[in-house]
Image (cartoon, rainbow, N blue to C red; front, side, top):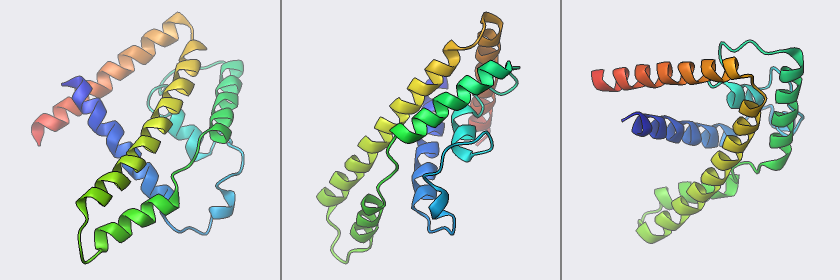
Length: 154
């Protein structure tokens, strides 16, 4: 059940990330700028997994370096793919095969992104001390229990 909850939440994260990247914004010129500690990408990668963990300055710096590297390595969602899906969705003649192919293409890119993000999180996790790793595990179990409790209430 915990794995199912985690999978559902990560899927929502993927969809919201793709949507956020596709939305027209006045800040498009800032999208490819380097990550800073206040940048949303850095916060997304570090969010929740490392909440409540006291980090040394060298650990913080290394985390920033890893997220910066990730930012320059990963490919963003192709806006063309999202536009193609929108066109297929609004087409007067629904083509299920084309929609499936387009959805698979988008999903494959999102899986690739998730693998890259997991790799960065793994590298960050490797920077932690044993007590910090224990705290990460406790935080994870607490969040999953809360998610499952919420799911059961629905």
